Image 1 (spheres, rainbow, N blue to C red):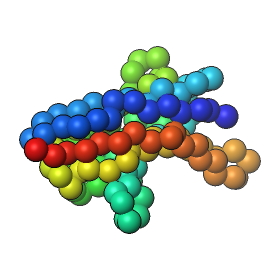
Image 2: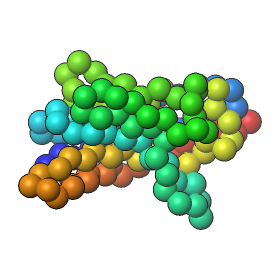
Image 3: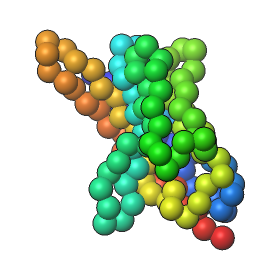
Image 4: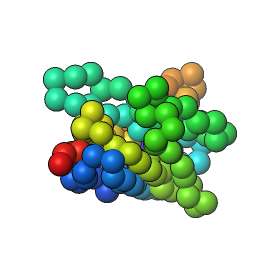
Length: 119
């Protein structure tokens, strides 16, 4: 089991940058796929970026070329680097870790961190 804590959210002006962090307790992210999701008010929670345990990354179309998901060498912190943000990027951002144990997918979520893009 892993516990996730996000940080780094806040207010940023359009065109600015922000870096979100997600720290995993216990054994860290080893063996887990990780992802960042976001949810705006009255909207569905959608994946923004993900990274498999092998390092393969995926980005949703709205953030391609602007956001970067990465992990530190200790494999206990995942980052989401956000650049050229727009008001449409405003949302609560959630970190997720998942793995499959005995054919059962397990998901773990952080509490979320608010990102507000506004001038």
